[in-house]
Image (cartoon, rainbow, N blue to C red; front, side):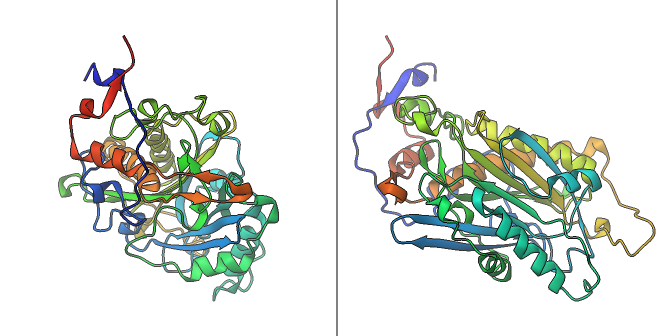
Amino acid sequence: MKNFYKLVLAFSMVISVSLSAQNTLRDYGAGIGVMKTGEYNSITDVPGVKVGHVTIIEGESIRTGVTAIIPHEGNIFRNKVPAAIFVGNGFGKLAGSTQVKELGNIETPVILTNTMSVAPALDALITYTLSQPGNENIASVNGVVGETNDGGLNDIRARVIRPSHVLEAISSAGSGRVEQGAVGAGTGTICFGFKGGIGTSSRVLPKSLGGYTVGVIVQTNYGGVLEIAGVPVGKLLKNYSYSKNIMQDADGSCMIVVATDAPVTSRNLERIAKRAFMGLAKSGGIASNGSGDYIIAFSVAKENLIDESKPYYNPVELHNDSMSPLFMATIEAVEEALINSLTAAVTMTGYKGRKVERLPEEVIKRISSGMDLRNHFVDIIP
């Protein structure tokens, strides 16, 4: 292994996209960590959580979209979910964050989109919430909208996203398998100089540790030095922030949403959110000066839903000593979701003719197969 880290890929191959988009790291025979995944290896493995995408690709310049995460099927405003937010680096626009921090709950779907589309997304969340039966007298809605700047591939100044797109993402949200890669809010994003996008993953604790599920969905648009399962891919490809290849992509952002069915309140959800940032670091992210790196965490445990029509709130809370398995599950699921956003993506050409390649499939295959990579890399360090 010592010699391995002195190697760099002789990268002259033609990038292969023989497999279609949507291939996750596990589709290539690899995975992150030691814990079991849920049925779909997705945030939708958390009971009741749904995800919807609207992807907008128009002409040569529009590459953007919306992703909606629905915490549960009921009236979210009337049955709020305990929630917390952690800011890794705050160069971003996470709408609704101050009220979530103050009150410890979320009362709308969570929307991910591009930087210039936070306003129409908020408008849509207000429309959606006011239209729910039982919400006729509501006069304040705290919509939660996260964003990354997809201006590298998308003409972001065109501001094509409308409230109707957001409402469509909400109405189309479903359980089960989630589309990944260049879809929804990840349509035009770039990560580590490769095509980024939407990624998701989940972990299920053993029954002896509670049997709880942790699910994650990410929108990747950040830089650093890519690592996959500990392999320094960015270094080996000479493709990393401040290298000659991607000097302009040092900055960027990442939105991470963590859901669980464990009975925890905002205090321990914030602790979970902090661990999610460790998953970002394990992927090689550096939380650069211009990066908006935000983690939103919520619990759908039915016993802890917040019904404000009742005078008292009596939540059930896991002991602090029971939190460590959830921390581990979060770190693993975040790291894998981030990598899935890359493996599921496809090469894309967009605004001003810029072309961003997907992560080379051959590299993923070789990492996944456990081949002796020394046969495919050349030593450049004496």
